[in-house]
Each structure stands twice: as structure tokens, then as C-alpha cells.
Length: 433
Image (tube, rainbow, N blue to C red; front, side, top):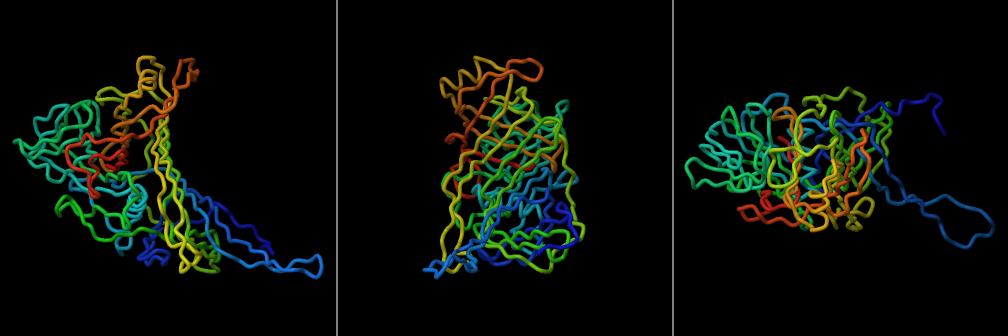
């Protein structure tokens, strides 16, 4: 019934690959660095019901194999050097897809979409409200941008209006910036954004900065295979038809940012061989402690909110799509709700968060962390509401604090029309710069 030799639980690895069709085992896998996974997997135990001739039981029918896999990890950037060209990403089913490609794409499949691109080294004469450059064609309304400043390190801003009519080209910022760029360079981003309705099937991946409006409308990966290996070659779970159905992030000052990724599993199997015990290849920058960045509330990003950190929860809710052909009766997943929420504690100010709660004033919330492009992350809710009365509490040093809970409200303030391809006029965005 059991081995005579115990096996280390915390030895193993996780690999992820994009499926060509829902529930079809991926052809190409990449190592995904994370903590030992949390497994909520189960196989249905079905009792044989009939009139017994005594008080006895029989063997069970083994039914559907489904559940969840939760991956907790320290968040990191995508490039060990400062990018000098527009960012790009590949479809997860492509042979050259990387772990970061899978990460972007499974976020996009659950949120709605991802826009990738943007770069110029022709910036000049910008103001804190408007970036100016020789050519803004690689940028899109709603996406995040980063630039270096003379005294404040790198800053992140969000495009409200990408306008090529003036000379030079202009990009109006959603919030007034802390400082203007120095060095003539503005970096684009991978901006994942929420679509208000359930994501299209397949979602429309923003993969090429060269096509009209920035991307392709070809079908892309909408489900993933996750392989979970233990310390021995016979300790293997293969999870099929996986999609991200829960996403939480914690960004605390002085700590490494963390996230919890929960996947719903369409079907899984136990392996008796094939588990990988090789050291996983990791070609990304090491996670950074949060000692730089900013958290902003309102029309200006010139002054950061004083807080020890923020928690972000996408509030995803999914339901299975029944399908008799599916290995465990599941043919896909349907998003029924998404309610992005940010919580944090800050010094109490009756004229600020209390008034915003009482009057239900929608304001822009944004935050960014990271030392330089390739290692930065940012979130934005262009029209956030305080949805609970800010609780009054005592801070660690005796300060009077407010616990603030924000949710993303409807937003339509960007210039470009909302489409499936760009983050213009979307309510929540997560960017990697």
C-alpha cells in the first residue's frame, strides 16, 4: 500500500504547454518556476446502487477526474536587459513559445486579451501630461508605458490618447506624471486587459506590432496542459484542459511580489513514468524586492500614496461547459463573472477615502513596481470606486489607518474606440514593462 522509503514532497517541478484543442495534450512544454503546487484534484467515487442480500459493499465506479491546481510563485520580469525594441510574444502552441509566453497567454485567455508592443527612442519636449515623440505608431490607447527620469528613476504611465495629428506625435497620459522622460526613450509593454463580456473563444491575441491596429485575429491557445512531477520518475500528474480561474497578487513594500494562480482542470491522469527531475532552465531576471515604484489615486501620479502594500484579486468566476466527448465530461470553461478588486491600508484622511466612499466618486487608481524596463509590473483601474466604508484601525506604529477596498468601475474616457484588440476603455489592466 505504501513505499518503505519516504519521498520529499518539495522536490519536483511544474511544466506548462499550450493545447492545440481543448483537452489535447500539449506538444511542447516549458518549465514554470513556482512553489510546490496545491492540488485540489479528485476522482469521483460512484457507489453501485442495488438491493443487497446482506450488509456488504462492493468496489466503486471511478468517475470523472477533475479539480484545481494552485500555483503560488514570486513574480519576476521578462528580460534581463533593458529592451531596445518593441516587446513581442508567441502563441502558446508554437514550438518556440516560452514560459513567459504561456503566462501572458493564460492571463489573456481569462482576462480578455493582451496587447504587446510599443517603443521609441525619438521622444523629446514632453510634459508631465503629454508624451511627445517622432513616431507613436507602435503604441495604443490604454496600454502602459515606462520611461526614465532625471531624479525619480523609472516611471509608468497609461496612454489615454495616442494622437499622430500634431507634430511631433503625442500621447496624452491618463494621470499627470511625476516627471518628464530623460534619454529620449519610451518603452511599451505587455498589457493584459479585462473585457467586460466573457472572453471571445478563442481570445484574440495581440501578437504583431506590424499589422493594422497592432495585432492578429487568428485563433490562439485557450487551454493548457500542466504536468506536475514529484521527486521520482513515477510521480506524475498530467492535467488537461486547464484554464486560469483565479488570480491574486500581493505587492508588499520590501518584499518580493507574489501571486496565486488557480487553474480549473478539465481532466487529469496519474502517470507511472515520465516525471521530470532535471533542474529547470530559468532565463528570466530574478524577482526583486519592492523598493521602488508608486501607488496613485486620482488624476495625478506625482505623489504616491503612503501604504505598506496592496492586494489585487481579479474576482474570477468560471463554470464548466458539459461535453459528453470530454475525457471527464468537460468541453471547456465559461467565465460567469469578473470583479477586479484592490485592497490596501493608508493613513486615514476624512477628506479623501471617506468622502470618496460617501459620495461614490470614481477615480483613477494605478500602481507600479520594479527597477527598470524588463523587470517592471503595473496595474490600473481608470475608474475605481471605494466599495466598503473604510474601516478605522491602528497602524503598527500607532498611526490612524484606513482600510480601503476598491473595485473597477465602468470606464469610457480613452479616445480610441473599444475593440477586442486594444486596451482602450477597459476597466482593469495588468502590465509587464
